[in-house]
Image 1 (tube, helix red, strand yellow):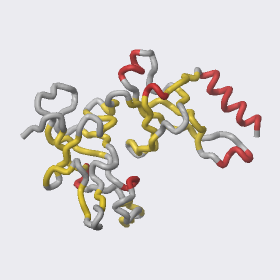
Image 2 (cartoon, helix red, strand yellow):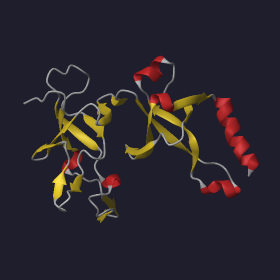
Image 3 (cartoon, helix red, strand yellow):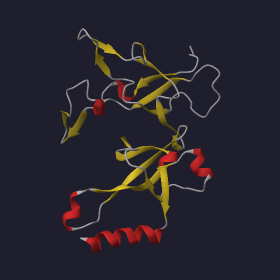
Image 4 (cartoon, rainbow, N blue to C red):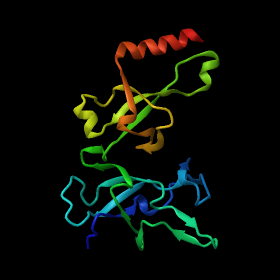
Length: 203
């Protein structure tokens, strides 16, 4: 069975929520709230591609999806409900606006105008050290097609506009999802080094 315009997916690991961490062999629940969007599973396994789809995504690949895809919510009567993506059993319908990257045998690839930026650890000292990462500066990890055409590459240090970032965990690392047009500056190696040295001197 194929659906027009939607991927049929199941939550990775068979769980709607990614709220269990194993510490010293013991399972710990990190969040008990089904309303907590940060605890919802963001990884979907593709079961079927849309009808007529000829793109690079295949069954078995992984999608990085919006936090509402698998999450439960309570209706006005306080009844537990699934969101609009729910199809049947443990299957969900995911359209092209609901995922931001896909992963196949060659790794992660961005969907549409999204890119992913890894925050850089703050090396400032003194009173400036309370911030763990540099604001609005990061390492470009996964690029949109337009950014690749513009000559950007993975590992470039870039600046992005305020309030444009949305946090995800990708392969165990914190990253920010940013629209490619919100990446404004590419720093060369000397500029990045100068930023770090300037911040340390200012402390």
